[in-house]
Length: 229
Image (tube, rainbow, N blue to C red; front, side, top):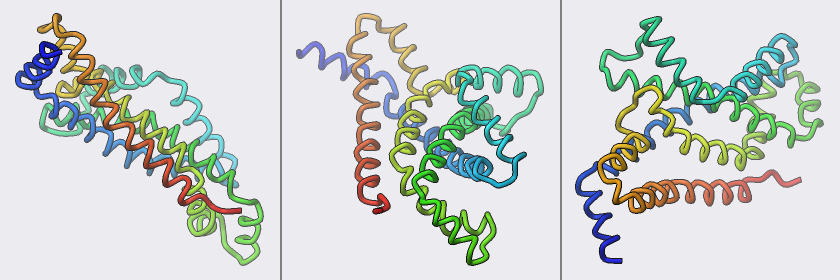
């Protein structure tokens, strides 16, 4: 047991484990914000009375949700950056980080859209009919009546999407974000193969520490803010 604990100490002393997790947290934070914004727009398109917007929103969700995240990340790196020479920052490392955020955003926005749409389905049809009866058009009705209730009903699926986003942030290695956890784990295993169990435990426990509070918080908020019928 003492030898196992000493391996933990040696690994933490030699490698920036906390910094690697911090990069994943930052990727998750920014991608969560942007995917929530984009996902909300997509959800509005999907419930819009305009058929072309419904079709465009459904096409985005069906295509992106069924495309592997690694493919999206690789496309951004090899096609958008390498071939098209499109950059998001003059700083080399920051450019890769922003591409990672973009890839995570466009992928998870499809799941956010479906989570919000599931929340919309919990809003009684009479709410929308009442909004139309008092003269509200689609956007004001959605903003003032439908979406506030839909978000409360979508807390649990949004929490699941956030957990998936946090775990999927490790795929940012595909766009050469070199300081995140999966890259560091590979480096640690290559240099310290005899510490393989300790290395696995470090990252397994690290992600559990991040994921479990999110699950507990979303469960609490889902119960606390649920719309009572």
